Image (cartoon, rainbow, N blue to C red; front, side, top):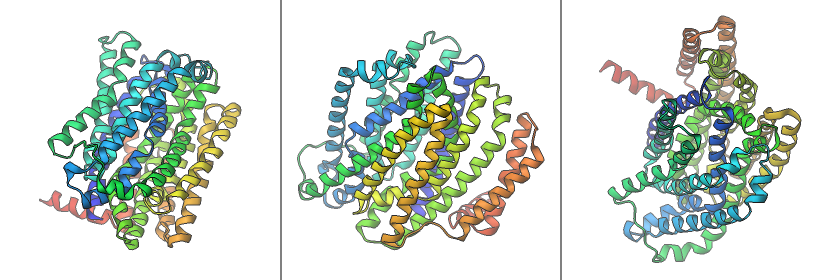
Length: 499
């Protein structure tokens, strides 16, 4: 757990720095006098569609790396390890097939479906360039995690990509990039650039070798790999589609769709603050979880499960309260375009969904790396079949708040199913009495800060309101010893301060 804790903490810091850059980018996009809501919505739709394309084109290669890397590492020299070569070849071949089909079917899939969002058909081919870089990077990221390079990949994904966009936005603000066409053209190369940086790093560390000679590990495990990868690919695909379908359905269904999607994406971007620990913990835990399954170390699995739940719940519920306390004040103080005030209640439902997802721990990763990964596929199918029609219908009737409500319902059911499976099958469950204590503390402190600072506006009040809530929340967590991972971190910080 020490390795996971250390990498999670450092990765969380990196992710939050990345979020700071992301919020700077969001401000530059949404401020008065910035780009339009439709243009902001378009760049986020690029990411959503790239995620879908990768989930299809990747053909389960990240899962293949995550599950079987320990076997390759144990039995092969790094130069004879053919896993990365096959993962990249299969993913790139999958992307080529998807891209060709996308070009052939563009008049049906894009031009008609997104009639309310003409910006997407206009920049469709740039979207494919963006998606290619995203696909390659995601495969390399999983491979790097297995080499304990989670900190580096988090830096590249959370900081490097966002810094690339920051430079573009500053250039556009100063008039150095005069046309949005040029902005999108350069923006589409953001992940290709990042993937190249990661490849160069792995080459210098002698971790990047491509050999297409079929190894004895591949031969011996192929019959196990094929069904595993097929099922995980299917479940990952449906989960990815379900998780990004909301913004896409808004762009397709609502009048002035891309602008409506832009408002939704602002709420989604703000809610991503709650996910920093989740991303960091996942990236640091996938390797140890796979190793624990290999060694049948169920005690370690249960500890990871419980600690991931309590730590993620602490962060997510605290960030939700901070954001909700400051939402209106933030829109006013930072002079965002008035239309973005509509994002407040969208954030409310998205935020609750993230608390549910994070509070139930690393259930997806534990199931996906076990011998019961077929269950992950089946629950993913359920999620997709339940989410897509619900998103569509609720969006038609309620507008761009619809997908947020729909996702809260479906992700609650989805995580309840996975929670029940792990409880019955392995007697693992992530909750204890401290789970209820966290929720109670957050609710009480939220009420206190709301009463003290309601109707106060301005940057100073944002800082004061946030400081009071954060200070009291952290003090409560330390005094009550809510998380076994927080105390060692606090003790280390005190030693460094005294030194």
